[in-house]
Image (cartoon, rainbow, N blue to C red; front, top):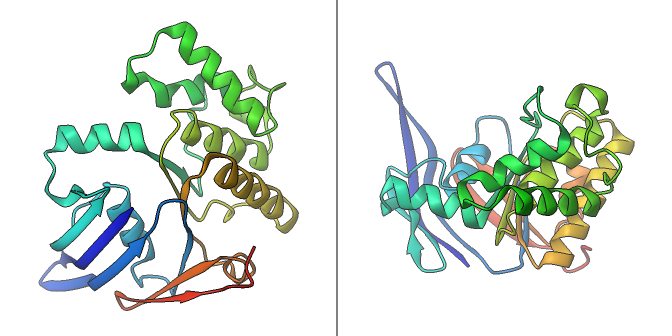
Length: 228
């Protein structure tokens, strides 16, 4: 479970101080699906970075299972990210010279698995997102939707507790968006993940069980009992 208490994040821009998050309090239970929405510059991606241990708050605490990630030494924080948190981004972030299987295997390198185990788990992860016949394809040989499936497989291959997605459908057309959301929701249900997603897409937000809206660094959470 995540527990955020009075999380504030400020940046310096020249002589100006920018407040990206302003005293955010938020609880996210195990297995929750939360969508984060709000205007550009409102703090959405900053909040996701805090949840992923990619950035630290200026003040406040970001606890995952009772451990405050804001105060962990960098080496231990890196281990938490490597073992417990999967990331999916809008731009896929695939290595162009590696095959789909090799791209997925990169997520397992920090876990120090044997090469044969990495190959097997990567193949299984790609099969689970419908790419079992594309293991040897390079990113340039796949569509945008297929590349995002590779990115999802890479995020899930280490069996994380949490899946964080930052605009994962932002580069896709409407039909491909729906396919990727089906993949993400299926993985969320099958693996019991805590799934947190930033999106500007209101069609996606309307289907979320919980919606966090951020404006000027402040958060409002609403529940949707009718959501899937």
